Length: 78
Image (cartoon, rainbow, N blue to C red; front, side, top):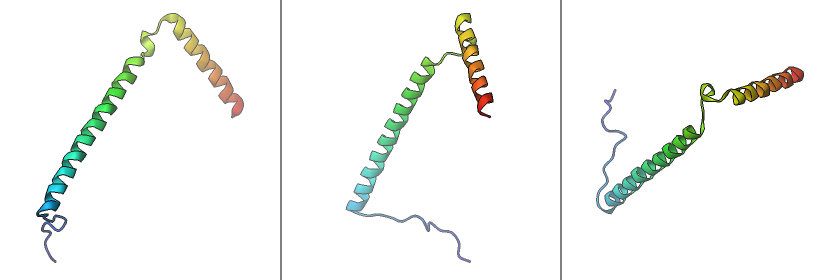
């Protein structure tokens, strides 16, 4: 059996190497920007969410009433 030796790696020379390096740099920047955009959107979503424990009592009652109505509807459907 032959040994595994850089079989998936190959070397690029000349203009192709320059283009490959530029493309790698472009991909790196693009992925960093996409990650930053995702984290910004995630933090905005987390800022809008409020834990149930922090809700005022009046809102807790409305949430409980709506969930009770949902339970009734589900029981009728099944």
